Structure formats: C-alpha cells, structure tokens
Image (cartoon, rainbow, N blue to C red):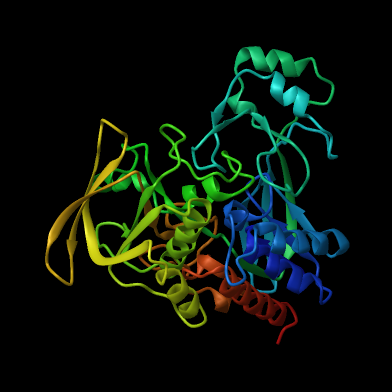
Length: 412
C-alpha cells in the first residue's frame, strides 16, 4: 500500500486538504490544471465570515506549502489516467509547458512589448490581458506563464529572440503512486449567456455577481472602483437579481446557498463607495443561515437598500442611457412593475466543474454534476465538488476528506 495522497484541484478546498494530510507526515501531490493556485477565492474582493480579502487566508496557506517538504504541487497539470484500487493507485499526470523560467523573473517589460490581447478568464471577460501574463494577485507560484497558443506571428517572433522564453518546451508526463485521492475539483459560475431573458451576454451593464467581485477588488480591472462597464460611470441605482438561473428546472435545479449573502455583501460594497446610491434586491427567499443572520439584518436596515420578494421576468436595455429596465412581479402584492436602473447584477449559482468536465476514472455524480460517492474506492470529495458551500464550510469539508484519505492509506 502507498501512503501517498493525491489531491485534485488547487483551490481553497484542495490546498486545505493537501496541507492537512502533509502536516501529519504524508506525502501529498496537489494537481491543479490552471497556472496558479487559489481557485475561485482568489477572484473575490472579500469572503465570509470575516469579510477578509483573499490574501488573508491564501497567503497563509501558501506559506505553509513553502515550508512543507511533504507537499509537492503541479500547476498546468491534468490527470490523464488512473488505475488500481484503494491503497494502490497508479496515476498519470500530463504537465503542460509554462515556457518561462523556473524562478520569479520579472517579465513585465517583455509582456508589455507584445501586441495581442485576449479576454482575461480571471477577470471574467471584463478586460483583456497579454498571452504572457501573471494576472492573479500575489500569484503562487510567483512565475509568469505563456499561453503559446494565443500568440500571433509577430509576438511569436519577438519571444523567439528572448533567452528567457522557451517556445520549444514540450509537455511532460509523470506517474504517481498513491493510496487515496481527494477530489476538490471546485465550481464555476453558471453561464449567464443561457439567461437571455435577463439580458446576460446582451446588455453591457447587466453583469454577474462574480464580475461584481472583480469590479470591487483592488486587484481588479478598475482597481476596485465600481463602475458601469459601458461608460465607466458610477452607478447611482443598482438592482440585484437573485436566483438568476437557480431553483429553475431549465437551468440549475437547486439553491447555491451563498448567492443571497453574496448580494447583500455586494450591496454593501456599492453603498460604501457611493453613499447616495440606491439598491434594490429582488429575491424569492433570502437565505442567510446561522451566524449570517445578524449581518443580513444590518445590511437590510440601511434605508437605501430595498428588498422586494418577487421574481424578475425580463431585463431590457435602455438605449438612450445604457441603463436597464426590469420587469418584476411582487409576490406579496401581486403587482407587476417596470423599474429603471443604471446597472443590474445577476446572482448566478455555483455549478460544479464536473457537470461538464470529465475525469479519467469512474466516479458517481448526481444529475447536477456533484460527486455522490467513491468512498469505498478511497476517493473522497471536498468542498464545492460535493455541494454548494461557502469558504469556511469548504475548508471544513476539505479537512474531513483529508482525514478519510489518511485513514484509507493507513489501512484503518
């Protein structure tokens, strides 16, 4: 039996699970398909329960990784095959080339010399970046990455003449022997382009809740200034549309647990920047569990934050000023109204990555893509791969998965 453990996914849950196992003496391999660790938490402006910036938790985790020789992490890595059984798995991992030096060399002048720009996935399409980039705050590993497939011919020629860039670097394959696997494959925001009745993908000033996090973040495309994407003007009247695609048999059939709290938090972002701004939150039910109830009551006591129990049926653009018109039926009065806002924020749900991505081994998923079993095989789900969770509960879930993985490799 191997006492090594594989953790698949380098977000907050995966990092937590990997550290928990490594710090009790197990060899741990952490595999992340992106170029940096940190996952969705890295994209947030602040997260519950303390409303900390991502650096508050992640930089501590990164320090723990640096100090622990038991934990080996691989970025730009993808598991391509798994064979064996609990206690004795053989795992093949493909490593994509980074094309940059194995140290934290400052490549900003080279980055700026490139001409081509592409949409930034990290910034959720709110801005563009160069193919050579380090587009996350406090990046770990602190290394640039070159997306060579995004280069045009002119930029490729520029880079081919630079000794710090290796355009000829090839993919590599490694084989790992592990006794247990933790799946922390995480989540993604529901694709708003499916929500055509809510203006998503068609109306510039109709954005998602995750885009609002990036607009609010000091590391974001506007350095934390909340402004309309169409004209950079400060919004004076903002609507938050709850359950955008959630609790809907045509989209996500479940409640994502965090969306109500996220919108209340973001309403506070707006009010802090613009004391005269007016906020309206349209909801089906406001879910503010446990310790968050006091936070919710405090936010809703603000006289400029209005809550309306009602489902938004339609969002249309006002061509003259770039604003949006919301058609809403008030569930308490039965009245239908049309209301004009400068900007609308869609509270989209959490969709597990495995709802569309596949793994090279057999694991059972429910109809929404959440992992439902695998423990008899020594495979354990952590965080939002298992169910929608906030950061604190994701960490608790990751610790639980790590303990189960340790029990498996120790034969208990």
